[in-house]
Structures are given as C-alpha cells and as structure tokens.
Length: 350
Image 1 (cartoon, rainbow, N blue to C red):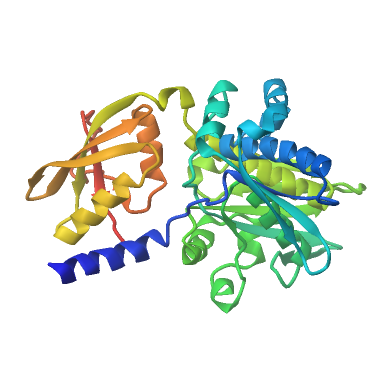
Image 2 (cartoon, rainbow, N blue to C red; image 1 turned 90 degrees about the vertical axis):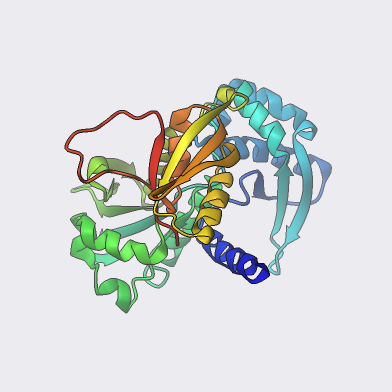
C-alpha cells in the first residue's frame, strides 16, 4: 500500500507540473527611484490598481473611480513589500496583497473574478517589414518577444512564444502563421502544452507610418479576426489586453455567487484503476470553484462523484474546461443531444 501511495504522489506531482497556475496574481512589481516613503506609497497604490486588472481580467478596472478611491487605504490590502535591487542599479518594489481582501474588493467594485488557473496561450506572430516577412522569436525580435511576455505577465496571462527551432519549423512556417492555418499551428503548439493558440500578423499600412496587427484564435469557432492599429509596441500590448479581456469573459466568474455552495453530480468515464480515480478526485478538488469532492458510486463503466462548488453550474464547467485531465463526454451512438441532470466527462489523465 505504501508503494502504491508513493506512486500516486509521484504521478500527481508530475501531472500538476503541467497545470498553469498563476502564482503572482496578487502581487505587482514596479520600478521606483528610491526607498522613500512617498515613492513606496505612490508605487503601492499603483500596484493595487494593477492587481485589480490582473485578478478581474478587465483592462479598465484601474479606471474604476471607486477603485481609485479605495487605493488610498492601501495598508488595508497589503500583505508585505520588499525591494529588489538589480546589479545595474535599477530598484524595484515588490508589493504583495492579501488575496481574500482583494477578492472582496473585486466583489465590491462589481468586477468579474478570474481564478489563478488560467489557459496557456501560444502566440505565433509574423512581421512584414520592408517587404520581408519573419516570425518573432527571441533571436529575431528579442525586444518584441520580451514585450509579449512582460505585458502578459502584468495581465496575469500565461503565454509562450514558440522557439521556432527545427521541430517547430517542420510543422509551421511564415505561410501557416500569416494565413492562420489551424491544424499545423495547433499541432506545433501541443509541444508547449498550450490550451489555446493564436496567430498574428503585423505589417505597415499603405502610405502610412502606422502598423496594423491582425490576430485570431486558431480554433474554428473563434476564427473571427481582430484588427488593431498603432506602432509596433502599442499594437502588441493592445493585442494582449484584448486577448485577456476575451478570455476573462469566457472564464471569469461572478464573485457575488462565490459564497453560495451547491452540489453537482459528476460522472467520469475511463478512470478504471484506483490510481486514476484518486488522481481524478485530486484534480477535481484543485479546481478553484470546488470545495469538496466525494465518491458516491462506482459502476463498471464510470465513477460517480458528488461535487460541492461555489458559483453556478456554468462556473464549474468553465473550470473543468481549463483542465486537460477532463473532456466532456459525447456518446458516439447518440444522434441527438440528450439533456442530463449530471455532468458527464471522460478521464483523459496524463
């Protein structure tokens, strides 16, 4: 039994390492000129507004008049602060806030609440400059690649800019990104365990100094093109903002419902061993909206759980959608949809 438990623990640790958990959602890092009280206070107030943007997924949250009023009481929300002094003399202030108090403030501001588990997005970006097209990588456009990561980090969005090494280029080149060819891009993105992929193309407008950035998700139902204009850096930052806002609309929950606990019947197929069942139970318990998981029954083809969760059924389904371990079950023998009282999923596992 002890060996079995060790095996479960080791498998679970390997599995959770693939989950995208935003660990710095309730903190912010800002550059300061010195360690004076005034500089720290000003930066801390700005940090609170930035954290509200990250936690809610709303890029306009820092413009909320009530939020700007609340940040005057900065000590009510702060957990701690510390300085990070770089070798080149740059001084940063790291401000950490109490999660429960920030969540309560988000609720007071009537903003959505987006949990710490968020989808990893692969960003494939092609640039046309002086009639020459090239894909953005750390080698080709290091400043733009750094901008993508820094902007996404400030918004609390996990992203990856593909390496574009031989393995990537065997599947994806400039034509696939420029034309948003979904299949090869998604196949290449699976290497990075990306939940979603987007393709983007950046080029200059004719007879203008302005740049145009078109970006799209690769999955068919979200194929609609988004167009932004400005300079290079501005359009990329706006793309990240738009991307975060769209994902928040999809995954964020109403904080007013978080105090209400309800139960749902959950049927899981494909979890055939004790290890699979234990892993599935732990994965369910790790979801941000889940408070308790119990096994209610086991049949030859499924395990039945009772899940206690906050929010509504839609919030639970959003959380499940973000976890690769589960996939909504579709009976191939059914020619029409059947409304069921329970959630029916397939165990995908590792």
